[in-house]
Length: 201
Image (cartoon, rainbow, N blue to C red; front, side, top):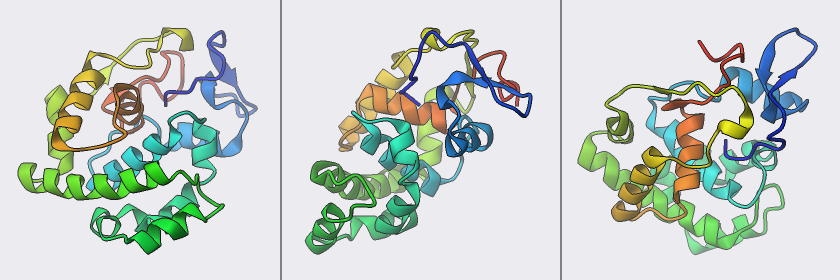
């Protein structure tokens, strides 16, 4: 979750009385994502691949834009099955580039397909992508204690190390900021604000 619209905001109170991080605003889909998914530790390889693809498409855009196109992305990228994505053809790329329901960026579409093949290679080397990515924190959630959105960094030493390793493996569109976004989303890092009702969950 690299985009945080207003760093002056501490928390967002919605009408259910729960105290939340402020970055989701009042958008119902964003609130649901924050409440049910963001920061929950992931241990499923297909889910890891989904976050990697979506966060790469977010680069230069808002997470809200990506989230509202998520269903269409799932259709285009075969429910984020890396084996099927790795087999996507030039015809499939062109069809995706013409699909108004997703973000039509040819370089990012091509990167998703290339990354699917590298993802499979990483699985083969490490047994699972999950075991590989959690090895950076020895299987432990890195729990931060931020009080305001302004304190949350766009990248860290952890995301720098993950980014370097993934680039060496052959992944594209995998800079440190993108890495930090999916480490936050997939719960390797807990970046809910300390007063957020999700922080201790």
